[in-house]
Amino acid sequence: MLYTQSQVQDFSQQTFAHLLVKQEENLLTLTLNRPEKKNALNPTLFKELAFALSYAKYASDVWAVLIAANGDVFCAGADLKAFAGAIEQNNSTIPEPNSEIVIGDVFNALHKPCIAKVHAPVYAGGFLIVCGCTHVIASDNATFSLPEVKRGLFPFQVLKSLLGIMSAREALDFCMRAKTMDAMQAQTVGLATKVVAVNQLDAEVQALATELFQFSPSAIRLGLEAYQQLKNISDAEAHGYLKQMLNKAIQTDDAAEGIAAFTEKRKPVWKGL
Image (cartoon, rainbow, N blue to C red; front, side, top):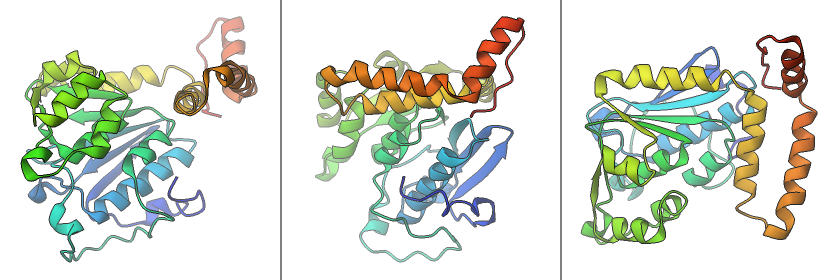
């Protein structure tokens, strides 16, 4: 992660300029709150997201992350004016990261369920958030669009993320033709997990979080870690690595609790440890 565990220890004392942060029990909700700029990702918002996700990774009482947004656009992508040098005044106290922020890598290193609640259009770099999540619950009026080639640009990082979700031909066609998908099309290609009416969005997201919390947080965390690592090792190494991960899972408090609960015919009480 771009921040160490010690750097995020004072998380609750930090001031966020463009991100609303709320933790209820084991769910950390991060709400993009730059509606006047269509939640465009400027350097401050990138930094705040990276810091919050680093905290979520290290915090044992955070079992899942929910990413939502205020305003009539979920995310308009990168704020090109800001990255071109436009000066912004804000009250953010988030420290500088240890290295350059590559937001796709930050999501990959989270190793916890991450739910995107998409109520409105997603454009360009906003896909890095959507693709980085393990689950995407979209309203039936949400749309997904990559307009970069209309501006003389190309969605390079988004393409990498899309290739983990849809076929190469679908991803390339989507990028090259500046297509817009409706929510149902996004579900068909795997970009959205589920599509519901906008007035059902909150209930669906809460139901998903509640369901995930019925299962071992440590088992899910180790499973997501293994999923990411499998992208970087050969087939010859894979089974040996996965055996090591199984041994690691067996040694967790959650595994001991799960086995005891099964034997005693009761519901387990997870600790996420």
